[in-house]
Image (cartoon, rainbow, N blue to C red; front, side, top):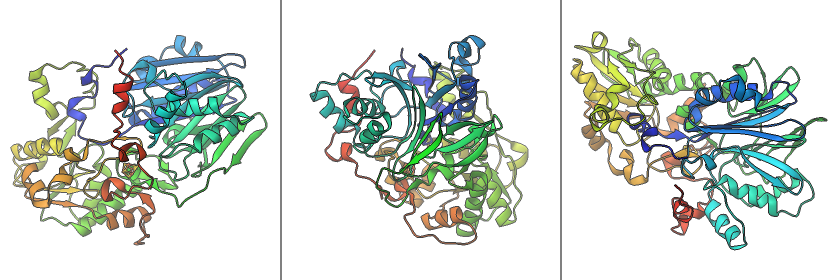
Length: 488
Ligand code: SF4
């Protein structure tokens, strides 16, 4: 089953995209229903496909589909088809592996020790290298997903227990992974040694659960217990919760872009409320890049908290000068050329009453290609704005991400190809300003502190990648996978 190319809504593609969200629950009478709820809360982390695998004490059950959680997991029949007291789930937006049903996670395999289902948030940076080696050794791959490499490494491990096999496999991979896995008698939550992607542990009426973000616990009234630590393997079984630290632990490098854009603003990640961080980012931006303006307007929805922080710090009114249509998206699966030409107008409209005759500060979280920004600025001008000053709540995005985020090639990144003046000209603004990397670190730390760099992964701003990029280094680009594993 393939997904139409336009599924990646063309009017909405000028953003970096988080690739996945994961959820898992153990010892719960409504494991599948809770997993679906959790995935629903994590839908912002991946809208292309969703899947759930449950275990009923004897058999594993799976339901996976291309599309939104609400489109495929709402019916009682689907939940009834996922019986058992333990389940894991996954929402996906692919970068590694084409949007095919066979790539939809959780992946499942029968091993000598029994079944194991696996759901992965992140990208492995040596997956292609490992895959080639495994294929040479006779492994038959069923998907084009980098996650399947882990499945084969587990299968080939000679370690005696499931957890030791899992650790053995993960010791061979590089890159970013926050994983949940479900065997016949345990649920596992694992974060890579750098802790690039988030993963939290929660509890509901004695049932333990893992989720990419705390908003997936909040939706069902579950209690946040703690973050899974970088390099930690948490095992939940009938005997309770156990923790292993089997990996060497370099200094953590959590993805700083989770604060800028990816995580939901009501989530707390790595101990910080995302909304509060975004407001501080906006305030920092107002100090670093003030603008002669009458009103602050956010690009909704992701620019709202930073614009709020900017307006408060600058002492300017905050107005909704752009209105977002929340119902655009999957409705237009195959837009005609004429509709496609309308582009961003399907998603945003300028609110003339709040911008006409005004000097507007337009606040967005980031600029990727700049195509959406250009259209939005034109829209604000057409609505009568006297001046448009764009302020971006992150540093210029100059490098691609290889850790689980869909980024264009460097050549398509506006800031990788142009200086500030050229970018302002292209976008059509009177002035353009970005937050500095130091300012971003200050905003995340709060209370005027200036933490040492790098404490986070900030590679898409700095080019300072925290791991080797083995698949890239030898000219074997990740998209070569599709040449090896073309599918219809
Ligand atoms: Fe996050 Fe950017 Fe690092 Fe990717 S490169 S993990 S988006 S900070």
